[in-house]
Length: 202
Image (cartoon, rainbow, N blue to C red; front, side, top):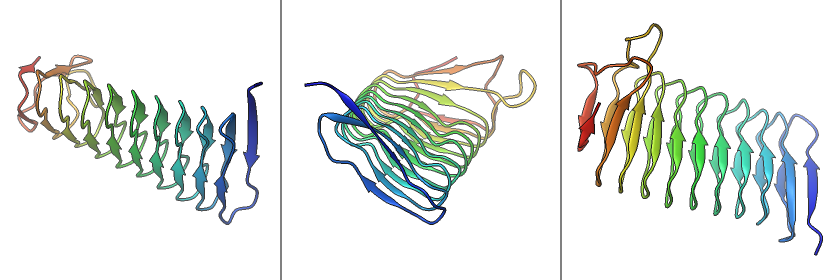
């Protein structure tokens, strides 16, 4: 069977609903400037929400999903997905698989699930949920809340502004497992940060 790709682009600034059928066909799905509901295939799709407050479901396959400029809800589904919330306050869930989830700008909720995920919250006051799996969690600017979950996780704490000025007022619960917290970019422990159940803090 020859692999093929389906291109679906909605037009107009109002809203749209797309669900692409065909288990042997990957899709490139583009939303509108409105509030869209976009559903991928069971193949490796590329989905862009663009403007509006979108609901995006990658389903199976190793999908690439870009939320766009609205307040989006993104579920990767099964597979090793790459999710980027881009702008505004988004909720992103990698679901099953080894996922790469980036909240982007805004006050986001970023979640892994089963699998060894790479989670980045970006800029903003974010909430990060590692859940199961040995995750790599990159904590950016803002006052963030991190619940790493099960397994042996690595949490990277970045800095804001000039070197030596840590990103602010983070709460990190490393959860179960042998976990490591590393301060990057000349960062250092700030007395306003709080770490719970973290075996190694460097």
